[in-house]
Image (cartoon, rainbow, N blue to C red; front, top):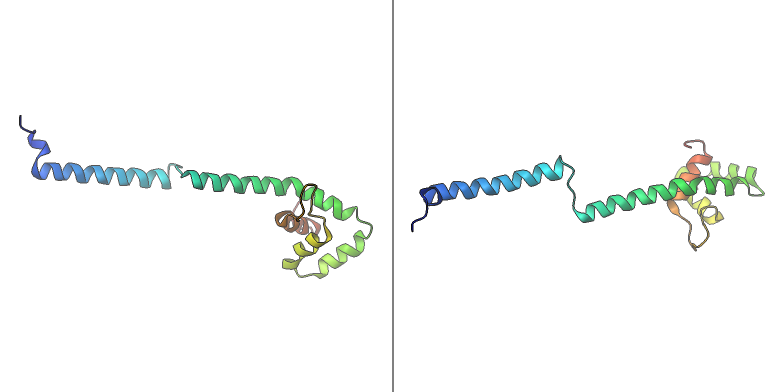
Length: 122
């Protein structure tokens, strides 16, 4: 039994080349335009969304803790006197961005809290 002519010589080479090109083109279109992603990429995106949700949920609590402190006016003056890129450290050190169950302040919440207290966002 002989192989069909289509699967011999030059034709076989063209079939293999076409298949390889098709696989590469499909992967390129799928990953770049059709929304395909690797599991690691999906996990990274999910983690980023969770972190943003935590920041959004805890920022109002941080602002409330700041505003309910006994020296709120003095602290606001101090906060605004500090360079913008250091304000989150001021909030972290004061403990306004530290929440129950954590020993350490949430840096993202501290940044967002400083922005809200400066009137830059809500």
